[in-house]
Amino acid sequence: MAAFPDTLMTVTPVLGARALNRATLARQLLLDRADVPVQDAVAHLCGLQAQEPQEPFVGLWSRLQGFDPDELSTLLVDRQVVRTHLMRRTVHLLAADDALAWRSRHGAMLRQRVWGVYRRDLDGIDPAELGAAGESAFADGTPRTMGELGRELAERWQDVAPRPLGEAVIGALVPVVQLPPRGLWRSAGGARYVPMAAWLGRDVDPPAPDGADPVGEALVRRYLAAFGPAATADLRAWCGLAGLPGAVASVRDELVTFRDERGRELLDLPDAPRPDPDTPAPVRFLPAFDNAILGYDDRSRIIDPDHRLLSVAGERVVLVDGRVAATWVVDAGTVVVTPLRHFSRADRAAVAEEGGRLAAFLSDGERSGVRVAAASP
Image (cartoon, rainbow, N blue to C red; front, top):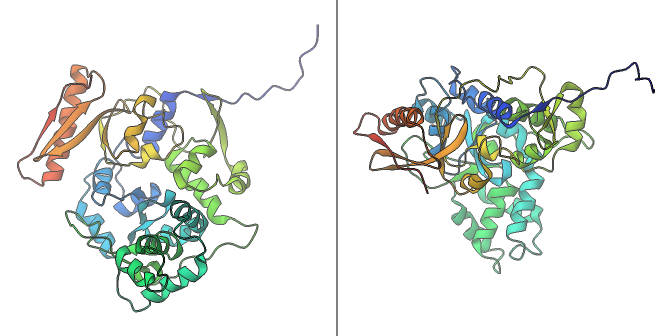
């Protein structure tokens, strides 16, 4: 009989869907509401997706104890947080320091995605030349909408429609921010832009020298702190960058590894929370396009495959026992919840209770209510 070797094989622990779910909820501040300043929460979450200007307020209300929406508005006015195109070329609400530090690292991805959409329109246009023209237009200090900027640039590139020109500059070539009142609590206003450096009084951090990627390494650590344990495909889905293989390799010795039930390798920070899978999870209402769902390639830890498209269609969702179980809308001051499955009596009561608190938050004392509809067929 062959003898076993003296050394023991190292077995990578497997994390089931429920264990990953509870880890995600803990990292996303959805297992227990956190008692931290709003700016710290925005930074911890690596920003909140925010193309719908009012949605981050619900996202933070669901995550923070005693959240006051005026605090977030003040941070925007005081230039401590900003709204800008970044991860996945979508508008995110970010801590100002992160926007300055991360923008250059995302530049190539932003250009690639804009040119992918407008390849025919922008064919033959030198991105450097177009970017310089955009910077020149902003030099007078006047905020511009994307349409206004596009029409100015179309005077030079007369064979190109204004929209591709404006979107190329604002979405990729010139780091810009959206100005308040866009994104303030209960404020309406179109998106007007100024260069990020002018608004924040500091230049965007320059790209790292060839062969170095300190920003990529920081993104890996920050992503895992807010979303881990996760695969490199999840990291890529969150930021839109090409997986950051060099950055992952550089920090791998700092990390621990697991596998999910599909056999994918998952990376994580050693001391990050990984709660017991049986930890109770409270009902939580999420806004449209919340990164707790969109921040993964494999979203099965939080949403069933049959409902995956809800997360990209802008549906607001309700978590019951940590998973997407309903959608919600506001109709004449009433929060209307439509279950995606049968609710037990206890589930229904918990959803109604949390929905009532959300209705009160959104109405600020005005007449409001909650209604839990019948389950979808």
